[in-house]
Structures are given as C-alpha cells and as structure tokens.
Image 1 (cartoon, rainbow, N blue to C red):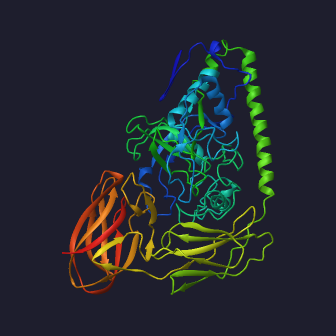
Image 2 (cartoon, rainbow, N blue to C red; image 1 turned 135 degrees about the horizontal axis):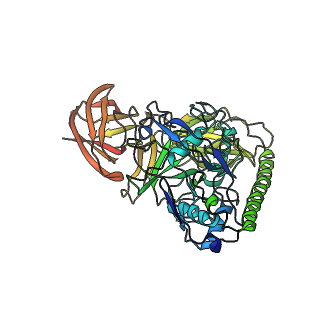
Image 3 (cartoon, helix red, strand yellow; image 1 turned 60 degrees about the vertical axis):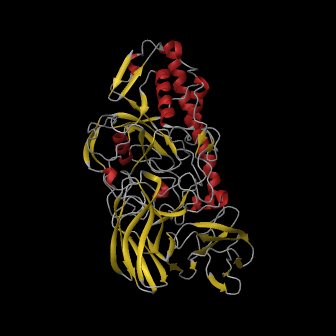
Length: 579
C-alpha cells in the first residue's frame, strides 16, 4: 500500500509480518496541534541587530491542517530501538568535543550513543544527519502503520508559536530574563559547565550569557521546562530540530498550505529552535546547513498525519495484542522519563548557590619585564574555593581561561598578548562559577606603517566577533574579524597607526565572502577617506587578498576606522605599503 501526504510518501509492506517487538516498541508521545492560520517569518535576529533577518522574509500567511507533533524531541532511548532492530549505519564522526574555542577542533570520532554531550537515555539524540532522522521516522511508520515524519518548517513555526504573535510563545522577553523557565539555553549554569569542562566561555561569544539559570550545563533531559500552549516541550533551546524543508535562502515562493518545501537547494536542509549552546532563538529564526551535517547541537522531533493516518487503514489487519503492547510500552516510556526528570530536578536543587561576583580587580604593568599583575578583593561567600583568571583574545572578544582555582588574591600574567586585551576573574565553588568581575584592559596599541595590521589588533570595536582561521582555510591565517553571518552592516573597528613618512600608500586587505558586498568605509582621523568594495571569494573559507585605492598619509600618528557599509564578509588583515 502507498500513502502520499503532501511531500511524504511511505510504502507499507506486510506490516503484520514485519513488526519488531511490538510489546517493546516505543511510540513517541504526541500532541494534537489544531488547524489554523498564522503569519510566518519576520522578527529580529537573535544577536540583537535591528534589521529583520533576511532569510525569514517575506512574511506570509500559512494555513495549517490538524496534525500531531512530538511532545518531546526524539530521545536516545527511542532511537536505540531503531538501530537494534535494523542495524542502520549511523554517522560515526561528529562535532561533539568542545575546547576553549568551542568546536574549533572540528569533527572527530563520535556517534549518537558515544559523544561528549550525551549522558542520559532521556536526552534528545544528537550526532545524526538529516538522512538518519528521516530513516528513523520511516522505520517507525512501517512498524506502527502510522504516518510518522519530520515536521515541515511551517508546521514547526506554527507549533512553536502556539497561537502567539510575540518573539517567544510566552511573550517578547527581549532581555531573556524569563526564558530559563521554558528552555535550555546558554545561561549561568551553562557558563559554569563551559569553564569546568572545556575552559571555554560564552562571554564575547554568539550573543553572550543569558542572565538566568535553567540548571543545565549542556543538553538537558527532555521535558524539564514549561511547555507551550499546545503542550509541546523544548521548542526553544536544547537542540536544533531538523525539519523536512530544503535550504532555500528566503521565503520567496514558499508553500502557503503548511507542506514542506522540497524544491530548491536540497543539499541543505532547515533546522529550527536553537540549542543549549546559544541564547534563545525566537519563533521565526531559521538556520540552514548541509543535510550531511553531524553535530551535538542538532536533533529532531516527529510529526504524525491525522487525515490519512495509516493506523486507521490497517486497524483490521494489525494484531490487537500488538497494538495494546505498543501503547503500554509508550506509557512505560513516559513513566521512566518522569523518574529521570525527578532525579535530575533533585540534582539541580542540591547544587551550591552561585558565588557573588568578585570586585576590585585592578591591573598594573611591570615595565621591567612586560608582565601584567592582577589583584582583587576577596569573596566572603561560604564554599568559595578560589578564583579563575581569564584573558580575552582581543579587546571585547571572548575570554580564555589562563589560571584555575587561584587561592590568593593576585596573579601575574607572564605571557600577555601584545595587542590590546582584557582580563576578568570569577569566584568558584565545587558546583558553580560566579559572574565575571568587571573587566580591566591594557593600553591602546599602535602599529607602524608601512606594514601589515592584523584585523584583531584593534583598540575599539562595535559588533564584530573574533574567529580562528584553520590551516585548511588559509595557511597561517590566525584570527579574523567575523560575526553572525560575518561582519554586519554598521560594525566597526578602530586602530592607531604611526606613519613613518608622508606619501602615497597602497591599501590591501585579506577577506573572505561568499557573495561579495559593498564593503566598508575607511576613515582617517574620523574623516571618510575612501570606500572599499569586497569581492566574492567563493565562500567563508576561501580567502583572497584584494587591492584597494591608493591613499595619501601624513607622517605621524593617526586613527584608522573601518566601518562596514554592507554585511556578509570577514577580514583577516589589511596593510599600507608605500607606493
């Protein structure tokens, strides 16, 4: 029998003869999502930019038929039955081992049941690609006679909104002060876990720390937070959820009937909902990536059709005892999940409180040897075991831990960076990490011209982030200026240069850009000197040296400002060479 629903085609062959251990089969708890209409798309990017995210436009009306959505994200325990029944060859290489630069070391050996994030059978299953998620849905359909599948992107957003028109289903929460009641995001506990496990930090990274506490360091057991109005859990945070749709760059030509969009760039697929690794993604934010991507932030949720539910068609053919056994197994799953949730809630309730933020951090330079000496006031909170010291990659950039559990109130950095950078400290106890202290920064730096100026060696900035350039991208590339989608319009950086002699200088700059852009303004002493375009280099990992306009520079010290007039590019270095 063949049943076709919109974009979904399932072939059912001898269901009765191919049922796998129906008394043990776990059918996912499902929630009926009522039919309705909604306006899909729009909203502000999660990094706080004022422009509406272009890939979520145009806003368009979509009609949704009644269907069922998974109450929870699919768990390790549920996926395990599929592997044991079929021997399916799931991916064995995954982005799952963070370090101080988060996932900078790339994909390593790791699988859905053996990775650095998974510690419970009741966490959402990760380290799978889109193909594996779809294979699981098809297998479960065959076993149950029901039409399980991934949600369409429209169904996902409609379910996530649950009748709301605000940023999140529970309200706008623009400062994300209440989101920890509803979601697992990059919060205070996540920051502690990042320091403890990887030496990493969310400060200066992808939107920073959400200033609330959801209790989870990494991935959470499903269903630990409040559901939305439809009774669905974890649609904000925890893991990114794969949907059926191909990776079209915006909504021009998108279906309006709630079906999946299966034309366009189908080598890429859409993921929705954000994850434990970021601040909360509001209801309209969408991500697009390779269908073959395998990471520890990505999982999936199932949907089930009602209008053409195969279970109804096969009711007379399926063994009644098998159906009852399947229902009992689903009930056992929910009871076991409730026990796991209770244990986890008790664990979270018994951790020590967060220590108070340290104060009085000061910085002195030892001129004789170039060391930087830090000192601070003691923290009197009970249980404080010491202090961690952190140094930023550049001024305003993310911090790396350089000293752990210092028992005293001083620290000397004997290997400081030569660029302008900052220090912070945090008080620690066995369970928690305090907020960072107020930062102290080194003095501005000046680069001699003629010469190369590394992009990260700025003295002031707005909006940009710092990223690593791997040798597979550009040998010896070091650091670069980047951000969410690259450098964005109105981002800027400032430098001091000392020009040895007056004359004309050739401006060159090393950049990467998928599509090219109008580029940036170059300001000298706050006056616009020239506008420089950014050519398309073939992608974010394809670096190219571009030649700009010749400029006349007077001898002496000057302030150089690079201000983006268009988004979508990265900068490694720029240079002024005598011409």
